[in-house]
Length: 195
Image (cartoon, rainbow, N blue to C red; front, side, top):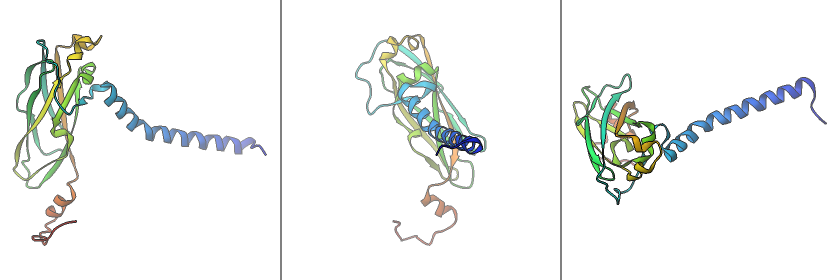
């Protein structure tokens, strides 16, 4: 028995709403995956080791740091720019300071501009890979180890890039479970272990 009239229309509308909900739910992880694979939107690559090839050609890397509104830390690059050879491993530091009287957890998001360089900028190690917790008054220097893939010189668009800007934005996140207990003044576990 086939549906007709208003029942068919309602069923079609419900189907469209469910389909749109599924597509919107899947769009964020799909876009994240797409950006990581292609470097689109300035998303960088991740490498387990440095490049095997180092060229004489150099590129300038600039460093930028910002905070999301409401993030109480002070956050900035220690060095504003450096010049590295293509394939050479670079090491840069960012400095964060917690001027508050409470522990604050943060997570950094990042991108690279110009966007076409994102797929050629590889991080070997970075403070942005994990959440950071700063105690009251604590100041830290956080390293990022990276290289620019020599294959950038063969890319139709990226080979004209002479300066890459690596930008981080820190935003506040909830304290990890162990820190949250300390914040609430729960110091009854001074000799106990946690599971």
